[in-house]
Length: 325
Image (cartoon, rainbow, N blue to C red):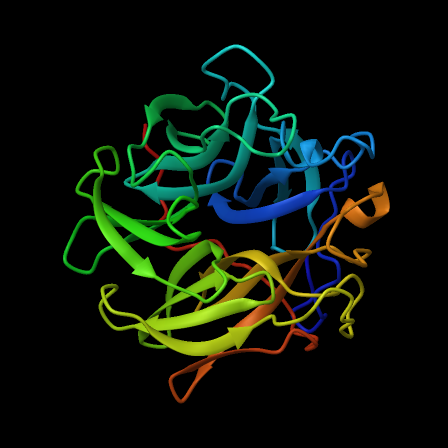
């Protein structure tokens, strides 16, 4: 189904039809299918209510695809990721294409913590030629044994940088550098916020590099011209639990987001808990989550996002995209 360039994008953009718990989306082009793929944390919303936080764990990575970025079809979950026995937890994938190979850095927790307090949280590295067959390369040694939410961007002088959340060190953003996407050296602390944050996402738009981080009350925005020093620029997708915006399911803060820059336009994909009314998630309804999308623009060096706008979305095939043989 093709999208009319003047038709506003629907809201919500996507809901997982099995668990209804799509979260932490990453969106990347699949040149073999000539389609966009959304790969996301597939939260288990139907876990018994008295089971504490176990519904957040044991998640697989869900997959939806779209020819234009507007109409998404559920495809299933990624297979072949397990490297040890058991029902394990995969969160918040970051997928980065380089020289025709897809690199995935995914948050991993062994098993399902019974009381929501895992002993360790690691980032594991996989590669794939097609987003389906994944080779496991092991854990990425970083700044502690409780790290999640990787984001990778190429450095202007060559090499790559990974940003991630370190829960041992105040739930703040740290970084590591690599020449080859396999061997990483921890660079150090990058970003502090008053109450901690997660889900760093870095992209380039309007002549600047931008980092957004999820503070659980919106996406705090930071700007850089070199990927080394960052200046706070404000907040987008701000909101409190229960705040209602104009579009369907756009309720509360926009959570753990991914940005796609395509044909000189930028789109932020984020998720919400439309029926959450308090600090906990005691019911299936309060746990459900929806994926939404909004356009980002840069005006006078400021990143802006109007989440109430009816912006038409049409993602084009990226130019110069190759696949390794």
